Image 1 (cartoon, rainbow, N blue to C red):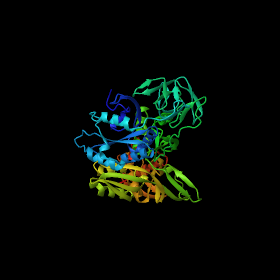
Image 2 (image 1 turned 90 degrees about the vertical axis):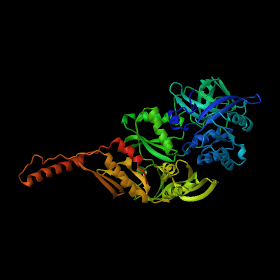
Image 3 (image 1 turned 180 degrees about the horizontal axis):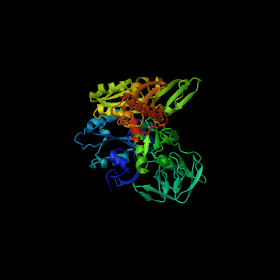
Length: 563
């Protein structure tokens, strides 16, 4: 036994956040003596992992909406509450951490009733740390939430709501049995794939796996088939009997839509296949991950990966490095643009290198998102200033209470993905919260800024930015690279360019040998002759020399603030 028992990843325990939804079964004896079986899913709260939440809601009958007694309702609380309401779930409001010194449970309960309706007294007051109020919460679950439906006598229909890869057992699928029953030894069919599999082992998670041999309608558990092919079992698929199975599959899930794209490249080119296998296995556990192979002149072979947000990108990269012992370089994050061409066509642009030439390009559309920020009222001014500096358009403003305000904006997604969240937290002392969802595409005045080293474009440093910010980005990048690139035997010009126009330049000065040291006295022409010969040699060297860029220079591309 250990703390945070459902947060199985080291990353989750270190950061104090939930990254991966986790399913567990517990048995509960109610106050009236009835025995209940509770199948629970612990879900993340951060906006970047909202796909995990939506999948979990599709497999449940009800939800506990937890609010921190010291923080109150946050933007992600509202977003997840709306998701649960849209899914038609019964919601129990819960105020947690009531034992903290800064807790104000009555205020948090009042804000929850404003979101969900009802009376503030309906909220269950608990402390997960001390155990206070947990009995009341379990009673509320069995009294308020409906039991699962389903027909035990019908053909099997089971929803695969999660999966992971076990080195020894292959793919392990977590399933919710909706109709019929699932038994070891029988043959089942994946309805989306049309593939038949033999069931090797069936059981439940408590949270360690416990073999039961069968699952019936309404139960949640795991299924092992010995399949090692990662692409065979997909989240959202429906399992049925191979013989006389169900005719209609369950509704499954919507495909996740990546918001941020970045290139991941192994520092050692020989690790490319290992990176491919690692991404395949990780996608089994994180189905919101999308990727395709790409090549960079500077970094070699790698993958263009789509993420749900910047935190998602950071977590995936760290998991790849920790769990699969890879050393990776990530390019600067970008969003998905649409390029309108002169010939009337349209091209999707996932990265700066995909942007068509200016001769073919008519205009560029960038994605806008609806942003919801909840902040203490004393920080309204500084939050408004930050959002307006990032091209945000003010929507409505609602007071949740005299101390807390909810702000709505329409903003370009590209302005959020770099450091907006960090800036928001620093300006509000960590009290503001952020949530966003896709809104529309708009034509914007965007340009591609290329970084040239020794007159050669380095695609890893290219980015698409708004024209007003292009000069600042170019200056910051060339200045940073001048500090990071070691001196060569020849001058290395570092330039930022928009098309053929140079907007910023720095030079890494050459290492220089004092060739005139042996000249003492004599005519000045002797020194000039030696210096001219050195100059000619360096000129020839510059034409054939290549610039070595250290790995920290690529990492530094992510660290440059746009402010």
